[in-house]
Image 1: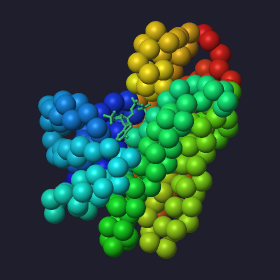
Image 2: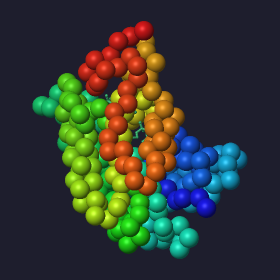
Image 3: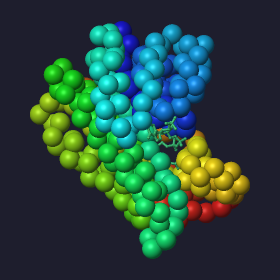
Image 4: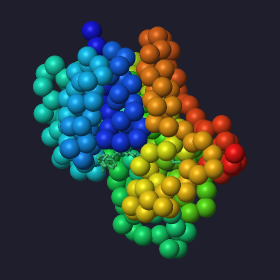
Length: 252
Ligand code: NDP
Ligand code: 8X3
């Protein structure tokens, strides 16, 4: 029987790649995001490539009522979530702190920290009831060190790092595994979002070296969720070979 995974931010990038990889490896997937048409496209793609089942939940992780309502609306067959991938997230803006826009900061804090908490708060009690489950939080190398102008984004990912460690302790007696996956630069819509739709600027981020792709992270997540019951991978940092951490990168 397939396991059930709920993936936040499945419409693009790492979340989309993870969804496809999961659905080809004995998972039924609950796919979530704000862009409904992209969720529907993804559903079609999954159905054409695998026999896994798909369920769409269309919500904004920043809105606690929407999160609660969406997860409560799951049919009985979909309620036993085995794996939660807290992936939805973003960077908005790249400014020195004194020039930062409050709205950008709030979007990052509300999505990357509060959104992750809202979804976890809703899903984890059901895992606890079953004494079974696995929560994967997508952090970043930006949660391990900070870089110029990264201030608030790095802050949110450092928060994800700390929250993940705390969750693992709290979930210990319930036998729920908690893992952080911390990627370096992955070519997705991330930079397009960070630079507010400026494609030229976004494209320069991945020029001159081979970055990671969504599938690289999806493969790592699949590895983590397919370990034996007694094995919990706590924390993984993955960078492109051309990158040592958030700061050091060489061009090829
Ligand atoms: P993308 O922009 O390609 O994907 C982000 C996903 O998050 C989209 O599916 C988007 O869906 C979803 N999302 C964003 N805001 C919300 C929201 N308010 N409510 C619901 N869903 C939301 O970026 P990535 O795939 O690169 O990013 C995924 C995660 O990986 C993020 O947490 C990011 O911080 C992290 N990361 C990315 C790295 C990179 O270099 N790309 C490196 C390290 C970590 P929609 O817009 O449809 O709502
Ligand atoms: C995304 C990676 O280096 O742009 O989390 O912050 S970085």
